[in-house]
Amino acid sequence: MMFDLLLTNGLVVTPSGAERLDIGIAQGKIVSLRATGVGTPDEARRVVDLKGQLVVPGGVDPHVHTNSVLPTAAESGIMCFGPDRVSEGAIYGGTTTLVDFAHWKPGDELSESFARKSAEWAGSTYTDYALHGTFKEPEIPFEVLEQIPDAVAGGHGSYKVWMTNTTPTRPKQKTDLGNMWGLMEQTAAAGAMLAVHAEDDDIVMYSYKKLQREGKIGIEYMHHAHNNLSEKLSFQRAITLAHHVGAPIYLMHVSAREGVDAIREARGRGQAVYGEILPHYAYFTADDYRQKNGAIYHTYPSLKSETDRDSMWESLLEGSLSTLATDGVCTDLDVKTRGKTILDATGGHAGVEMRMAVAYTEGVSKRGLDLTRFVDITSANAAKILGLYPQKGVIAIGSDADLAVLDTTVDRRITASDLHEADYTPWEGYQVAAWPSMTVLRGTVMVEDRKLQTGPDGSLLKQRVSSDVLNRPAC
Image 1 (spheres, rainbow, N blue to C red):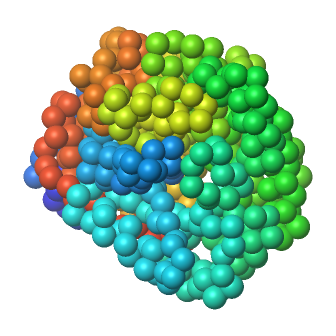
Image 2 (tube, rainbow, N blue to C red; image 1 turned 30 degrees about the horizontal axis):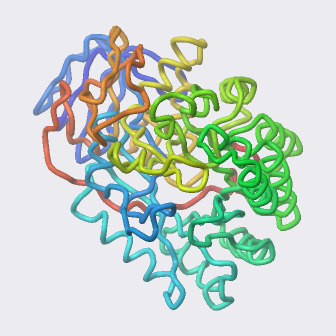
């Protein structure tokens, strides 16, 4: 057979482990995997000798925001960057699939929400993409809830709600617990995943009032507003409600040890609960808010203590937490730092391009994370939880030829000029132990030797969550 592309002599991570394999690719799919140097050499239109570099599935980042008005800048209409900029950073960083949010607006059919957001991505993305159906209203009309089965059948297998308005100053986004119950009933019955931004709104809003009364509104007080008690209470409520309904849930941006503990306990009971962390929650602490431009380290809920930070990697290593996402909200530095207080700080930051390198450096290099587990947290688990597996998230015969080639011999410190998302990075000066040298999307070499090789070529994906993931803690 003539391959379109043959990647030889790479250390390839499959579900059975890491070994030297040649990867044969045809028509965008992986069609051959065999030991390097065994048998008659295969023929291909292009052959690349990877010289022992690490090859993993292209990353799947299950949590990015594009073209969204920044909530704490709502009056100004300032938006974060669009799919073009974010996906360019992602493809340079070895991530080949991004999952964004299609916001339902009152008066919309659910299908219109997905169509509107998909149109923003179509033709401008360097990665493939999927969309969480997202609600930001206190109440979701019954006729909209009843559209969820059709949307799931059409390939939209995940939805999201907020349990808090996050700050007192931004537009409302909280869905009340009763409507969350109704949404859970629909997603559970239709075989979809419900993602939750879980914070206890009463605790958060009281904390803001208390801090304002005490004159403690500098960004260094952010973790007192978005505190551990809020995460504990909200996670317990969300998990209890999901247990009552029999619904799977995906708890986004876990930031406190109490959140980790709640997820671990639920999974120990066999409940289909999945937890996501962000790289900076596993590296920075609330002390970093006191640095110059401390806002660059912030996204909601908040950075917390060293104890909380250290619990993140412990939990990824042991399997209590499932995914490493970014909650990427890409802006340049002037926008990111325009807010100086707990009331107006801009959440989210540019981190999509750094995600794979940070995961390898902090996980594999520093903590001995197994390479198959590295794949789990950077691609496979997100693909499973959101119904994209085994099309995405695995190097296997028949899967999309989405590949990240990582040079693990590097020893370099990152500067913003190395990156493509924004004019700053919270990872300035960070020393990486791996750096992407090639990214392949559906058999097309998108980036090689840190140079973009071709234009945007991403597609909307259909999600179908497996019954295994829906009914027990499967990953």
